[in-house]
Image (tube, helix red, strand yellow):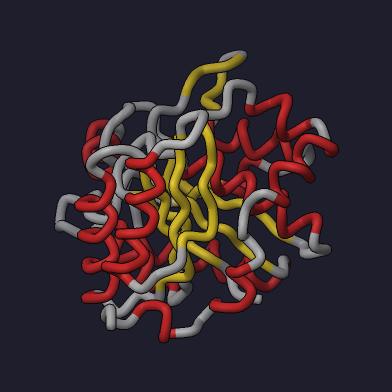
Length: 246
């Protein structure tokens, strides 16, 4: 079973909750899995120290998760990593992230790497972007996108960018699905699959109480059963899912 890079069409599309849910799913499948956030900007102070909000969400499902193991760069400024690192005097090195990831791969069955923002988010002032890091890690990507109006354009462009970079795409997950039967969201799913030839393996509703869902095994099992995360097993590393549409 491969590791995966969880990326998004934009910031705040739900990458962290998707990463947490995928990690919980694979843990329930018996995998020794770790969610990994290489770069966290927008860190907050808690008890006199900086903490990573995304890792705090991971810890709902993985209470013993070590923050230092799950994160390489922790930045306070809520901005693009290249700006936050410049303002805080931190030099983000892709080589350090890659080394950290390889060490995690040796220890765990699966590493779920969560990006920051979208694909063309600069990590350094020289223009090195998130998409370059995904390519360097040589793992398939899972793309998280909003379910509603406008997502076709953003999602298809993101898929095109990854294909041009030679990144295998393991699946797409639509987030923030509204209650009830939305004809727009269902058609978005159909059209995205048609235009990209990439399967949508999950449609996650607007979650009102994430903590309750993750901490309640019965609720979590029911929720995970409603998704198609198991399809990642079938298509991991399968380049046929990331070729041009027929």
